[in-house]
Image 1 (cartoon, helix red, strand yellow):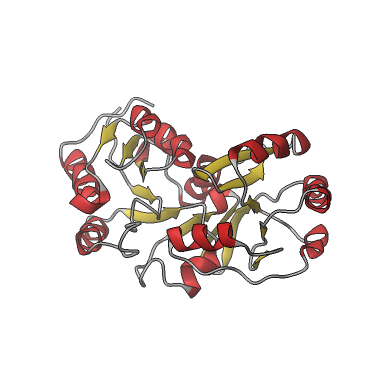
Image 2 (cartoon, rainbow, N blue to C red):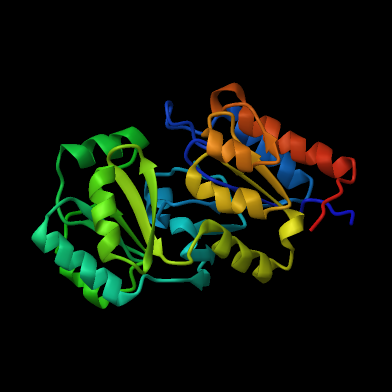
Length: 272
């Protein structure tokens, strides 16, 4: 069945935004403009919180048609929430109980707020590595009475394994080799949020492309009609992709977008 790509979903870190320069390359901005001119809808699909994007200008003012944030758990267009999936309150409470027994830095993310229980050198290093500020320290007991969409324990792999035994109703995605992971509801994923966004806009999985570099991007890369891995992605991500572009520092995102435009001009055939 012949179809063209109508929408592209982009990861931010390592895909749109260079980890080293902490900026979006000019070549990427050029490519996004060309995709927009071609009538393709542009979306964000990230593990980031909307406050990080807005307050720290991670997207440098570039407009997108919708945002799949917190690894698919909080999705919105403008002021309208398209879909949200909070963590089970019992799982949140178990996390708080675990923190009382074995304290470690842990961030909690509500729809419009993010906060942490403590800050140490690990938090300082991780936040410096990703180029964003440290969230405010608050009494995280408030999380018991809030809709929590994502939890970020700043822990080693061994501690993550221990925490997993307490939080059976959650999924874990490590994004920093030794110091941090995302915790989301079981069954949650970027792809889940993307499909809700697609339903809202009226396009199918086969009519979208997804570009990413991290393991939390695998679900969208394998689900989209055209899944693209950045050259700086892990081998696991590259293996999941239908096309591998160059790394972000060598105009990989621009090359990926122009691959999509060429694909459309040739009337790409996608088997759904």
